[in-house]
Image 1: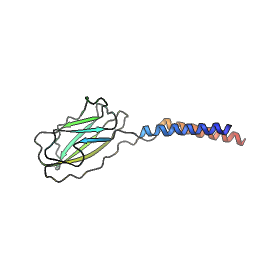
Image 2 (image 1 turned 180 degrees about the vertical axis):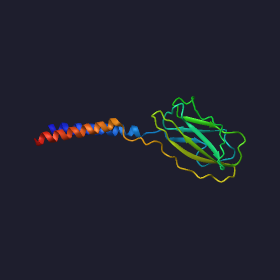
Image 3 (image 1 turned 90 degrees about the vertical axis):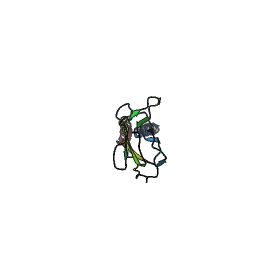
Image 4 (image 1 turned 135 degrees about the horizontal axis):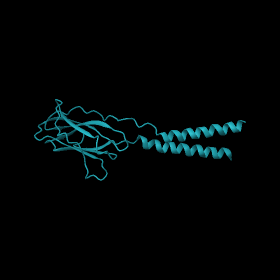
Length: 168
């Protein structure tokens, strides 16, 4: 009977650890964009829209759009879309009169979970050659939550004490 209780306690602790580890690893990743990565457009869009998997903070987000020469072509007005009730959408306006060419969108977000992610995507306007696409970079690693580590440590301690009692 004693071993059964110990096994149940260990399993509950491990399940608690596993359940909280997934939460810590979730970050606000890019879900969609307009234009999409690699898009070929007939005319330059008026703005860039990025949608993420989690709610974002109102401050600390940045979208920068550059042309093939590295010149910034956005208006510098990265905004969290307040019309999105889930607060997952960022936009930035582009300067008017953008011509044919390859453009790179670099972004960095500030998630409400305290972590940030960053990445890039590209699009072309007209007959230009596409800019090289860089895969999104991950932000700060989430690691394992402290509550999960404490649960695991408590389970191991209980197991050790139980084995010690049985040996005595």
